[in-house]
Amino acid sequence: MSSEQHTTPGNGVGPGTDFDAIVVGAGFSGLYMLHRLRNTLGLSVRVFEAADDVGGTWYWNRYPGARCDSESYFYSFSDRLSEDLLQEWTWSERFAAQPEILRYLQHVADRFDLRRDIQFDTRVTSADYDEATNRWGISTDDGGWVTATFLITAVGCLSAVNLPNFEGRDSFRGEQYHTARWPHEGVDFTGKRVAVIGTGATAVQAIPEIAEQAAHVYVLQRTPNYDIAGRNGPLSEEYVRETKATYNEIWQRTRETSFGFPYDAPERPALSVPEEERQRIYETAWAQGGFRIGLTFNDLLTDPAANETASEFVRDQIRARVRDTEVAELLAPKDHPFFTKRPPLENGYYETFNRDNVTLVDVRRSPIEEITPTGVRTRDAEYEVDAIVFATGFDAMTGMLFNMGIAGRGGVALREKWAEGPRTYLGVATHGFPNLFMITGPQSPSVLSNMPVSIEQHVDWIADCIKYMREHKLDKIEPLPEAEDDWVDHHNAVTQATLLPMANSWWVGANIPGKPRNLYPYVGGVGNYRKICAEVAAHGYDGFGMAKYGKTSVTGTRPASRFPVKTARAVIG
Ligand code: NA7
Image (cartoon, rainbow, N blue to C red; front, side, top):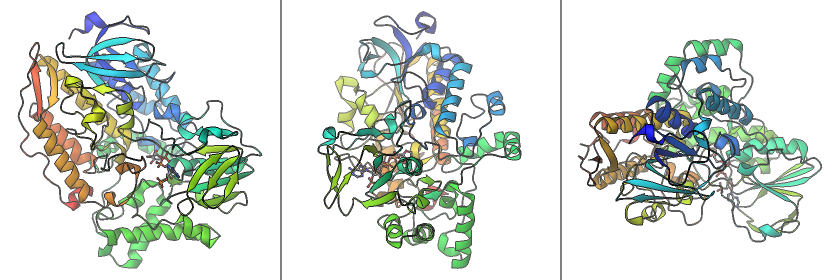
């Protein structure tokens, strides 16, 4: 690897240019990865980004009401990137809206001079590993082809759009939008009849805004969710001052807790306290807003009886806010336990159903049969509309990796290797695909955490690993198959100790017909996971095989049980 030779500033690299690393994606992950590899380690790096600007998730998701469900003050880069930036940047709201997060990422790109190594408007169409040269060959949709030692995916977990193939979809004569492909100029729904398909976190943010404008909104709900009160609002100067004064402590806590939030871990089981006290604890957490209610007791994700107390508490909140009792019951979930699907944060969602211009349609009871030229037809009725909003989510965690056409040793496609579900070591690499690193890949905490915390941990770990390889004159790394087997077994055991497999969520791939049912993210906890990764690194990256420059065969040792099967308690403790 020689960084001097390859650094090619500006867009438009020549065909066949060789880089130390190709990074795919310029959201939170790609930006920080580029910074670490180029600015800290001096590697030659090219980032390919399909959009015409940085931002990733926050570039694409511009639907009305789009905002983050993690609190602004710890949904950002930490002191790992820049203490100055932490002190200088001031968020305006408790949960930042999409334009503000996008502005933040644009600022990061400019401040750290990242844009000159990002090639925008360029989608990776294939990535093939060549054993003879130990290089990845990467093709792009502009006809480009480059090679690199390392291929690093920074494509996010929710970037491959899920647009269900409803019969007649193309025949619709009105407007149709997927929330994650929203027109940059916005959409004016004034005076229009709108059907929104889906009631996940996206729809819960968008529906109240659309209902303010539209003549009528039909909300087509297949599965109700346990929506949690967000309690968004402006931040006081005092809060901002205190947060900035204690930032180091806050970040440290995010790295140690189960979900990457700086909240105290619960220590008691739900049924260990009398009912009255339990209600009071739920009410306090509910009043605080955000995900705190999920962190009230330590067995909500493992004990169905404990979970039911929280589930019923949320159902009661819904019943108290929705005037029509039938509609309220329809909105109150009964088919899965609380937090086994990602609970959306809501700011006025339930009150939306008290409006005269909003109708809840149960498409579980009466499924959507087709889209007609003038609307949506379910088994029992037809809804004539001027616009359809698909808030139908994503082929999460693997969709984007497969779409990129990644093929490892011997031309084996990643899609083929993972036909029965992902197999990884630590969720960051997979056997048969040397020098491929996946930031927040499947079987890592990723979407079960406050994303920037997990992103930084992965990026730092990958950058440190590459630094180690350079120092030891190694240029090939790949998980040993037995280490991968151990990690998959551990991942599955931790999963089975929780209630998460009980729900048909995108976390288990249930939203995509034919997708293998597995828990895609790792539920062993951000803090535990970080320790495991750090120990692996401290032991010379055990579980990985590595090869010296010019050698093809890798050697390595199997880690001595760094990740035993956790007890259920350890999962969320
Ligand atoms: P989600 O959470 O996957 O929600 C998608 C919604 O669309 C959900 O209510 C689905 O119902 C519904 N859906 C999907 N396909 C269909 C069909 N064929 N018919 C009817 N309804 C359908 O995506 P979001 O964009 O809201 O959120 C994704 C994540 O982004 C979120 O969890 C946060 O982490 C941020 P279902 O529940 O599958 O019955």
